[in-house]
Length: 118
Image (tube, rainbow, N blue to C red; front, side):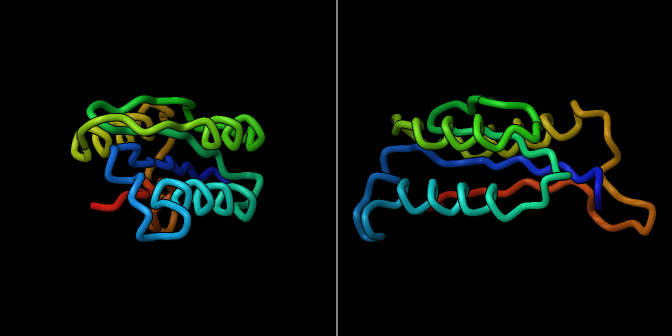
C-alpha cells in the first residue's frame, strides 16, 4: 500500500559480532537492511530501531533513505539482548504514526522487520 510503514529493527548485541557469517553477523544485517532500503518503494516510510540491552529509536518512519543508511552504517555492538523490548518499541513506533495498520482490503499496511541472530 502507498501509505505503508515499515520499522527496521536491528540486533546490535555482542553476539552479532560473530564471524560465522562473512564478514560478521552485524555486517550481514547492515547489508540486508541497506539493500531493503534501496529496493523499497519510495512511497513507503521506514523507521529504524537498534537494540542490545535496550532499544534505541534512531528514526521514526521517514522517506529519507540516505539518513537511514548513514545511521545503519554507524551502528555499533553493545552488551546483552533485549529482543522483546525492541519489538514492543517497533510496534509503538508504528502506532505513533497514527496510520492504519491495515489497508482497505484488510492487508497489512505496517510491518516490523527484525534482523537478529535470535
